[in-house]
Amino acid sequence: MTALAIGVRYSAELEHAADFRGFRDGVRRLWLAGVAPRDVAWTVGPPAQGLFEAAPSASSLRAPRPEEAPRVPKAFVDLSRLVICHKAPDRFALAHRILVRLQDEPTLLKVATDPDIARAEMMAKNVRRCSHKMKAFVRFRSTADPDGGERFVAWFEPEHHTLDLTAGFFERRFAGMRWSILTPDRSAHWDGAQLTMAGGASKDLAPDGDINEDLWRTYFGAIFNPARLKVQTMQSEMPKRYWKNMPEAALIQPLIRSATQTTGDMIAAEPRAPARSTRVARERLAEERAVAGLSGSIASLEDLAAAARHCERCPLHGPATQTVLGEGPRDAPLMFVGEQPGDQEDIAGRPFVGPAGQLFDDALEAAGIARDKIFVTNAVKHFKFEPRGKRRIHQKPGLSEIDHCRFWLQEERRLVRPQLTVALGATAARSLSGKAVTISKARGRVMDWPDGGAGFVTVHPSYLLRLPGAEARDNEMRRFIDDLNVIKEAVWG
Ligand code: SF4
View 1 (cartoon, rainbow, N blue to C red):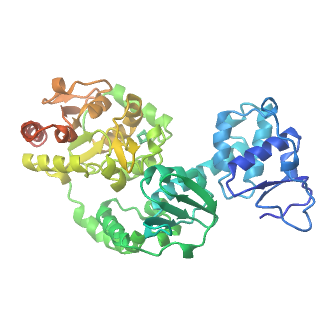
View 2 (cartoon, rainbow, N blue to C red):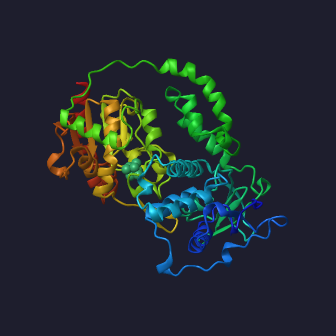
């Protein structure tokens, strides 16, 4: 509840702190009545009683008919939807002011130096970031549902009012279980069929811990790579404010303390010759990097991971859990490129850890290639799937998604500079060559990718998993291992 300020002519009441529908309704009525943004006090909940209660409500003004409504571009709708989720008290007044100005300045949103637009964009960026943090750091705890069965409950304290904005992600991601996310000023509840938003909750309502806590701690300890540790980057990506609700946080300080020694033990790599690269490919990559606003700023795989974490270049970022980049030594002479993360990779945040990854490991071992000497990644960095009941069914990425995501693969290749890059399947071959490739024609020989780097094409391990019958699978596994032997010979002689 916000007290009205002296001089206001109208109060505009909203149901909750990020009530976009209420804001849109109120701002339309105010605009039609010609009320200036400075004359409005936006309040969450009923207006304050007492001294300033005399200001009439915006809801008493007439709502415009469709032909009378203010005209705004869709970009304003998208921007204001984010801005009103910010915690700044003047967020509604700012969005209101931009709407009024747009009537006389239709290209206002393109003026990045305008103080209102610069502030709104900054607020939208903060909100987007807060929403990403919520997706990454919400930790559900198992508890008994009052209606019977199990319910997963999470307590979270977002920096901004982002639960309404982000609840759809959890609905898609955890469609098969009943869950609640509680925050101080808003809560979301999913019963397996319907999402309900309600008021805030207190932390006491969320369970403290359950059997999954140990699992999180084990998982975090396993994925922690001391050679990649940058304490400042880590704390900016995983701010301390979220630690208290994360079971794995108890491990962070001990792991940081032990990292220096462990890293020293790991520095044993020999320098190697850089891969070839044509001028045209370099220019194209430089153009893409400039368009992405990343020119010169990505100097390491850690920088790349930080930049890709919030990628929204194609729609696949929406339903997926996280961006899954490649992993392996920075100076790996051999890079394998698969299609996209699968269900298990999407959850773990690592490539090739699901069933196809296990088969791939078996084949590598049979060919005598150590997995810790190679870099493994995917052509597309987000999991594309179709929800079906409790399951997420893999879907092949489209050409547009492959082409949008090629940028990240090129960056990985620029940083790792492998001597040989292997396409596992048609999606990877399309990404690396920029055109459709028939696997049966291209398979089995060392060739050059268009950027000049040495390449090789073979099947994706998931192809072997799909083959009907043990005999066909055995035959194809042998062919796949033969390919790996040719690759090993080409790289290590
Ligand atoms: S799939 Fe690739 S391009 Fe698309 S959002 Fe994810 S990282 Fe970005």
